[in-house]
Length: 168
Image 1 (cartoon, helix red, strand yellow):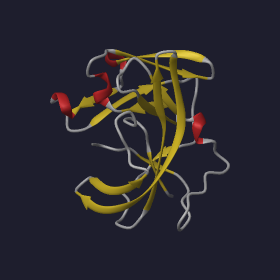
Image 2 (cartoon, one colour; image 1 turned 60 degrees about the vertical axis):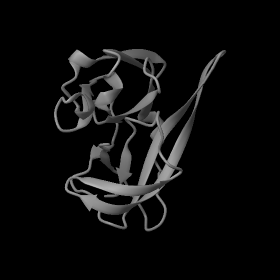
Image 3 (cartoon, helix red, strand yellow; image 1 turned 120 degrees about the horizontal axis):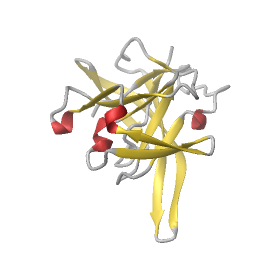
Image 4 (tube, one colour; image 1 turned 90 degrees about the vertical axis):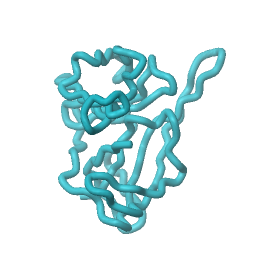
């Protein structure tokens, strides 16, 4: 699947996440099973297009306000699983919030360190809960505009839409 490359500072073996609190820029999406994530990049919210497969509207909370994402309001939408375009992405513009994260201008090289951050969702009869997860990875192979990487812990259903963070 397609991953997003976001610029961020990476030291040789560990990722320096100061002074940013990444939890402020990753949101968990609801109204989709399994749940998904999105990332705020500048004034845009970016997620995976396939999360809209069974739903035209997804929801998220940011600063205690509930927002709706309507598939037809996306600035850009592709879902390769449905034969729409060549990638799997949905981009929405939100002027009322922003982040210092930027889209990376280059692909990582084999051996580069990566970071994925996402919410892991737990759904119980009493409601739902989530935990913020960090997965570290190393690029194993480049295939045209895509890359294969080894992530620990592994990514899973429900982490879709979360960013891959890559150093300056």
